[in-house]
Amino acid sequence: MKKFDPATNIQAIDMKDAQRGVNPSICDSATFMFEQAKTMTDTFHGETEGYFLYSRHWNPSTLALCKALAAMEGTEMAWTTGSGMAAITVALLHEVKAGDHILSSMTTYGGTFAFLNNYIKKFGVEVDFVNMQDLDAVKKAVKPNTKVLYTETMNNPLLRIANIPELSKIAHANGAKLLVDNTFTPMIFSPYQLGADVVIYSMTKYVNGMNDCVAGAICGTADYINSLINVNDGTAMLLGPVLDPMRSASIQKNLHTLHIRMKQHSANAMYLAKRFKETGIKYNYPGLPEHVDHELFKSMMNEEYGFGGMISIDMGTAERASAIMEKMQELGVGYLAVSLGYFKTLFSNSGKSTSSEVLEDIQKEMGMSEGLIRFSVGLDNDPERTFQLIKQAIEATK
Image 1 (cartoon, rainbow, N blue to C red):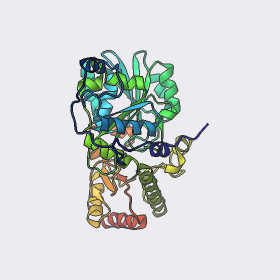
Image 2 (cartoon, helix red, strand yellow):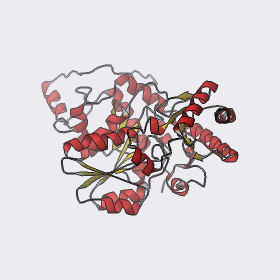
Image 3 (cartoon, rainbow, N blue to C red):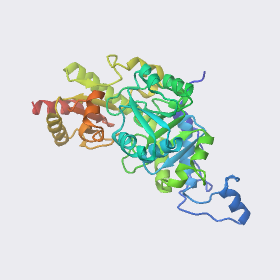
Image 4 (cartoon, rainbow, N blue to C red):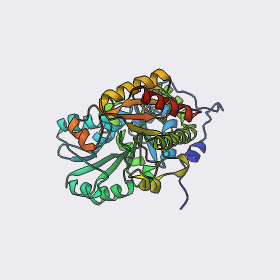
């Protein structure tokens, strides 16, 4: 079987525009003209190719990005949205109706947890949360009305790894779809190749890598994406969370350096993990053998991109974590900020920030320490300097 290569798939895309510019032109139009009325009617009903109707449907700039994302994932098509949460909510809402059931990972991004636990239930959709690492528990939690299994490939913030091939088997055996958020690990994992039906991204993070926009993506089959944008009942079409064409063009250019960035993020995180281990700092990183999911990670990964740029340390209490983060920012380690995938190192106390929507008793059940500091390790040229500054911050707050 030929090795799947997301970076080469992106590189193979012809980027030039009609004027032979090496980057696609930005199509700054919301609507498009037709020479004949019949062509407009046919386009409205999805019966033409090469025509654009209105940018809530397709725009040449967003289409170019969607083709690149589909190439990266090995899917037939992709769709972009105005935020990662828009991608998550559209993908989930599209699969269910009143009386249906979603089975979600207990350990998931706080915004996703809030949507599933507090919002979607208003529409009569049942939701249960389960430890996705416990496959027997997943099997037992599936119901006759389960339509979706939802998980993150590497979960936020505990960095546990989902067994995508096995979860896919469970979903498909029960007539459900497996939806996977791969935001933490683009290129490292290719969930669609592992059996996922739909792959979701917050492109705000690693995919774009600049923290200068919010954007999301949904990747899947052509039939699935076309159903999302159906003018009569497509969830994406009717809710309308589209991505601006100027941002689409910017993200597409950044996508071509993603493979380089992911390798460096991973290398720097691995360096810090080894130094934390040597120094006795309590850390969590799936790239070292003592991580509970290390072997599973290795069995699914595209090896050349490493084990990712996310790492965490446990400082015991929220108060100490806060003091250390403030000191790290003062010393120049990076920024006390949410988000991830930026070229500078970012850090936050997950329980008080990106996972604060998760109820405290569930945080404890998940195993999330109140002193957890989550790092998105940047593209630092000298990771030893970064380590020494982190160590200095820890020692200064004892």
